[in-house]
Length: 115
Figure 1 (tube, rainbow, N blue to C red):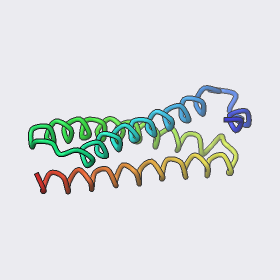
Figure 2 (figure 1 turned 180 degrees about the vertical axis):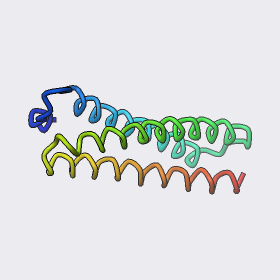
Figure 3 (figure 1 turned 90 degrees about the horizontal axis):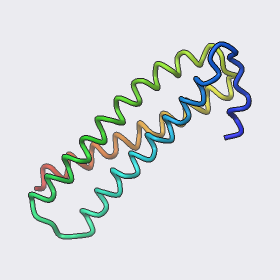
Figure 4 (figure 1 turned 180 degrees about the horizontal axis):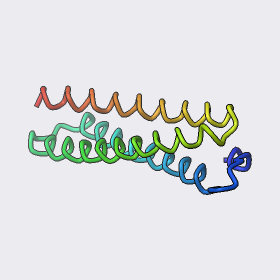
């Protein structure tokens, strides 16, 4: 995270730090959702257990979606203050998280229809 040192906004130096911390949290939450889904696929479980896991994953998806919406606003603000390289890097990280989130949603949809 040495790229945090390149932050140039004197008005709110915590903006990029918060943004990157939120990206890390979103990544961890997505990883926990993936773990829940992987653990289900490894074990034979009842429909009730599947429904509980899907509910939990949906809660995580909702939380990450809200976090990403907030990050989108921060990304727009940071575009005015960050270097182009930093902005592009943050944008790429956010897009990767969004793609993982979409993959989780697709997996959940498949599991719901097979249950």
